[in-house]
Picture 1 (spheres, rainbow, N blue to C red):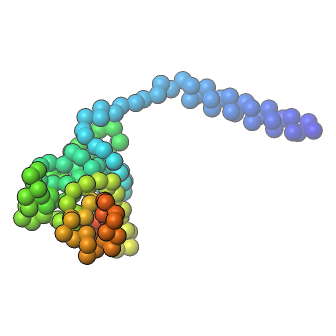
Picture 2: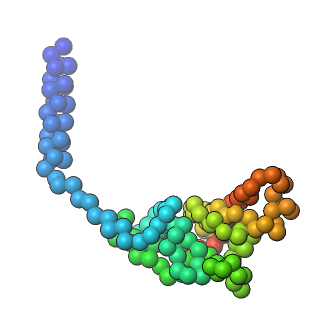
Picture 3: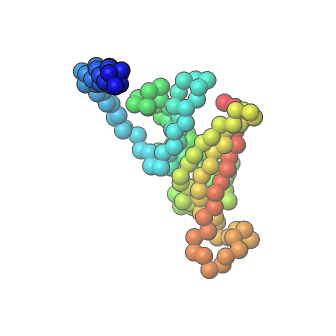
Length: 157
């Protein structure tokens, strides 16, 4: 019983010492949130020591999905362009060289994953299927919004 009291006392003493160390530190917070970034997804790249964020909005004109990088999750740098080239302008006119043109609009919810075995990056996103394709690829004619999941693949960067 005496041994149990001594161990309990030591545990309490250590816990109180640790608590006082943490209380003396002033919490630090910085997040300027200067960039538009709906639906963000962040991954860490151990090769560069950087975090990369992908967001629905914020890409340059003619591009889809903004790309940001940060060494500390506080200071963000916007990369020019975007992940994909846009297929349509603001008036829905087709742009030559666009990517993921199966979707008309509603590009959103980007996520990126890295496969260490292959060295490939997989970029997933949602988009609304074009009307001219919906009958062929979306077999539910009564469904109003034929949304699909898109996948883009990149071999190491």
